[in-house]
Length: 126
Image (cartoon, rainbow, N blue to C red):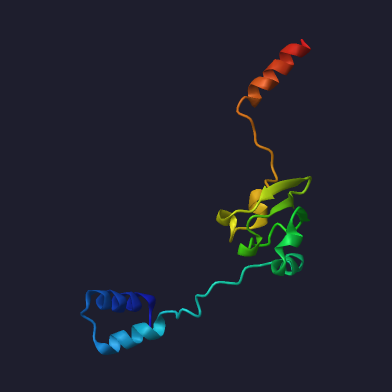
């Protein structure tokens, strides 16, 4: 069945004027819930061992920025490596499900008066 025909069937089904045969076709063509399931969260092997005993995680340095924060890690302090230094981070309930790398920025923030700073340096040289 062409996509345009499928849209027509789904539209009629939505309006409630489709026949039983059209409803059967629409059910066959729509993806099931098992197909649309999400991938499991990635957890580094080092962190997976810490999952059972979160006390071991306190003040540990984490290099795996791509690992997902689990609910077992809540209320612990970790150091996340950003490529140059480690940044201390306290894990709260709001951070569960995110990646560790989201909370350790890798780039410096640009200050808004940076162009003025360059002008001042040029004036000092003269």
